[in-house]
Image (tube, rainbow, N blue to C red; front, side):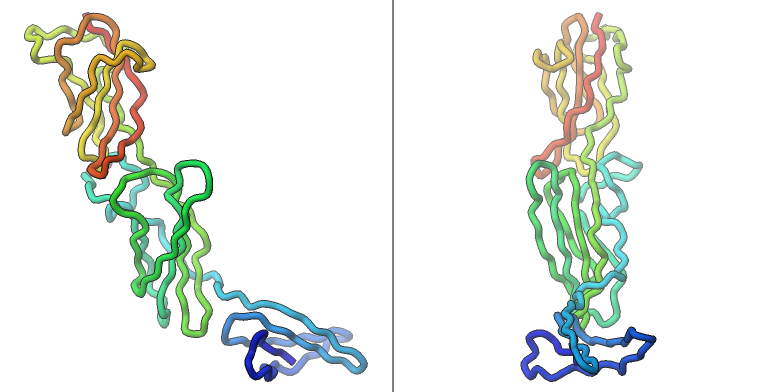
Length: 260
C-alpha cells in the first residue's frame, strides 16, 4: 500500500503490481504531485514500512547568463558601445503550462557575512535582478518554473560576477618625462580608457606612490584631463569611474611621470 503523508482520507494510492525476481520485488510508481509518502510492503509472514519524499523541484530548466544594460557583458569596461543604463536582468525560454516563475536571488555580495536572499515571482520568463546602483561582486540566482501539478522545473543555483573595474590609464606612459608647454595654461594631458555605466571620472595627482601627498584632485566628464601649473619633479596619478547613483570604482594603479 502507498499512502501520502498528511492525506485527509488516508486512502491508499494506486501502485502497479509487484514484479518478482527471485527473492526481490520491483514496482514502478507514477506520482502526480510532490510530497512525503509511506510505502507498506506486505509478505507472507511480515511487512515493512518505508518512507520517502518526492522532491518538488526537478532539474530541467535552462537559463542563460544575465544581461547587464541589455547586453551580455560582465564588466564596465568599454567595448566599443557606450552603455549607461545599469540593470542586471535574466531572460529564459517560456515553459509551456507553467503557472508562474520564482527566482531566488542572493547578492550582489562584496563583503563578509551572508548575502541577503530575495525571492522574486513573475508570470513572464524574465526578471530584473538588480537596478540602479552600480556595484560589483558575485550574484547567485536560481529560477524555478511552477507547474499546475505542484512540481517545478529548476535551473539549479548559478553564479554571475560583475566586475566594476577602474579605468585603464593610457598616457603619459609610466615614468615618462614630459615637456613643459610654452603656455603654462595649456597643462599636461592625462588620458585613460572609457568605462561603461559612468557619469564622470575622478583624478588624483600626488608627489608619492601611496598618494599621501595629494597635489590635485579633479573631476572630468570625459576620458582626459589637462593639468596646469604642476611643480617640477616626479608625480603620480590615478583615476576612477563615478556613477550617477553615487558609487565609484576602485582607483586605477598609480602611474608616475616627471615634470621638468
